[in-house]
Image 1 (cartoon, rainbow, N blue to C red):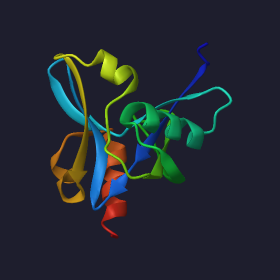
Image 2: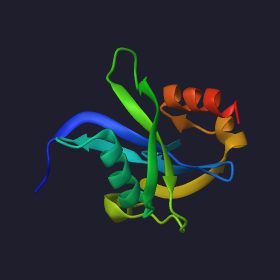
Image 3: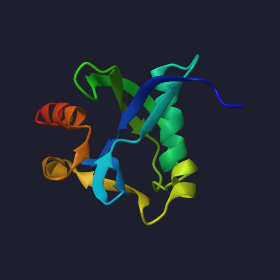
Image 4: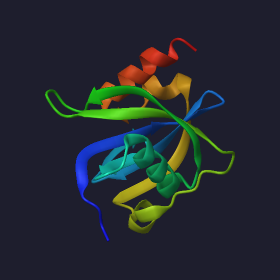
Length: 139
């Protein structure tokens, strides 16, 4: 039974040992990285959505979730929440629809990227990448 989507996406910022857990993507000839996450369903909080999506996409269990910031993905668009997620120890493993859909022209991989390399990679959306860089300058 599918629940109604709210059109708002909740994304996870998972930082461990100075590395950020990201989804490395190749789609239609483009290569980029995104934060794990997905649509918030009707009746669900952002925190619940982000924990559910993290478990689905990376197999990791969130133990603490704290809102980091909200950004527009594009000018005048909806504000999408980003959450700092503390996860249980474990090996991240691609799961859910992402694993099933994985193909050469629509490719997914869960990857740890060092905070120092964030600037160099094509991490989307750009607005969230910039906010994350501002925040991590403080570490």
